[in-house]
Amino acid sequence: MRILGIAVVVTGLTALTVYAEETAPTAVSFTDGAVVQSLTGVSGDPVKGREIVGSKKMGNCIACHEITDLADVPFHGEIGPMLDGAGDRWTEAELRGIVSNAKMMFEDSLMPSFYRTDGFLRPGNAYTGKAADDTFGPLLGAQQIEDVVAYLSTLKD
Amino acid sequence: MRNLTGALLAGLLSTTFVSADPVDDKLVLNEETTLVTRTAAPAHLSGVLDEVMSGWLFRGTETRAMQTDDFDNPGMIFVDKGEDSWNAVEGTEGKSCASCHGGSEDMAGVRPVYPKFNEAAGEVRTLEMQVNDCRETQMGADKWKYTGGSMANMTALLASVSRGMPVNVAIDGPVQSTWDEGKELYYARTGQLELSCANCHEENFGNMIRADHLSQGQINGFPTYRLKNTKLNSVHARFKGCVRDTRAETYKPGSSEFVALELYVASRGNGLSVEGPSVRN
Image 1 (tube, rainbow over the protein chains, first blue to last red):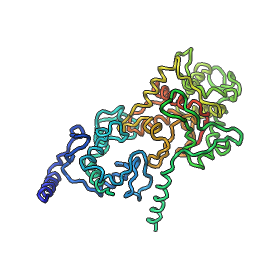
Image 2 (cartoon, helix red, strand yellow):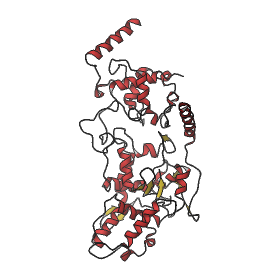
Image 3 (tube, each protein chain N blue to C red):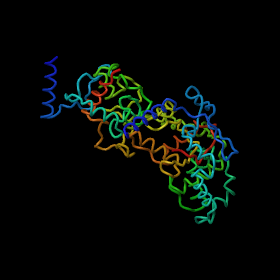
Image 4 (cartoon, helix red, strand yellow):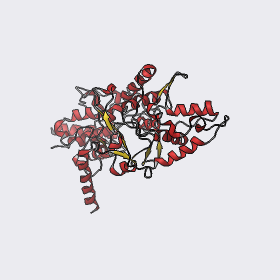
């Protein structure tokens, strides 16, 4: 376990110092809706993840989900399931899969795919109403996905 | 202390989420006309919805109250402006709307059946399209911008004289292919967020999405005065805003896609009273 921990830290440091070996949105490998491998090789930061989940400008997850831990941020939606205890219900790999592209696990899910760049109907340029251009990217970056997964993993009953 | 207040406020807010259903209330206009704000869904929605509900039932107490009295309804200022336009002579033919149609109140019953098929033109027309056709063909005047102020004032006037009459658009015969296209658009999941009209307004009406209380997305109250932008909003402008919010490339107001979508969405409200100009947030 300790060796694994060191290995992760070493990988993380390498990634930081050289280039993060990011998995491209089009190259994510799903197994039964889960994504086993980290998208970046760098451990997610749950503090940053919490901010992304609550921020309207980033994940805005609470637009649809209620999370007691984020009660300091007003207005939680009720479209998707409550996320309290999500870290007990799902493994890290499952959470990574759901956040990246929930439709791989739940075919008709309303949840947007946060790490996907293809297969959209009339994709736009953010919220301008205009067509997407070559700046089109996933809703969240690879490391942001890892940060969100790290935060959701802390939500235990 | 401020943090504590914030926490208490958040607590209060989160408790209100539990009961976000439409209110049980009656819309009585000027203490005399009762409008139908919930009724049995039209037959074509069988298996999808049992009941159709006006967006009025999903708004707060103060917003609802503003619509019950013409003196409190800010949209009625624009109805007055529409009345001025109605009587104004414009264009090369020296005519006003009133020259052919008489008083604006004689137009009662027009709004509820639009969009409708125009035999001579062989196309489905919205009320805006018909107004512009009148301006160009009958008056020799310039068209108005589809979602512009003059047009919204006129559609507000035409809606206001039909308030209380049930929406009753045809969905078969010559309009059926357009209606089918509108239905397809209603269920199409657009944009990077992959959201259809149905995802929010059929599957989740009554639920909160962040701070917004989702309604059925009925259009019987259009044009609608929104407190958010303090002006009249036309149906196609609202459609455009919704599609934009799915991070999609929108369709254009007046486009064949939005005409089809308007016909379909209007038909989902067949039986609800015309309310325009309604008040929403």
